[in-house]
Length: 89
Image (cartoon, rainbow, N blue to C red; front, side, top):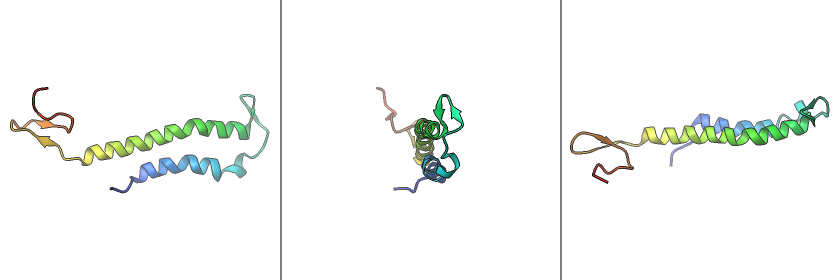
């Protein structure tokens, strides 16, 4: 098993750091954003942004896995991926 890419670790840590370590920056009632106290707005926005960050980390890891897999070549010299066997379906 390979170690995760630095970019995917960073994308996974951003929501954690934004929710846990930035409390002193946004722990106030005013200003009101979209009718919500700022601290509530901050937490809800990170609930929405966290899946986006994790999707980005997933994309980095899957692209890295695809780049590291050796491609198979058939007898005719054509390159096939793992999904196709090179024969007629």
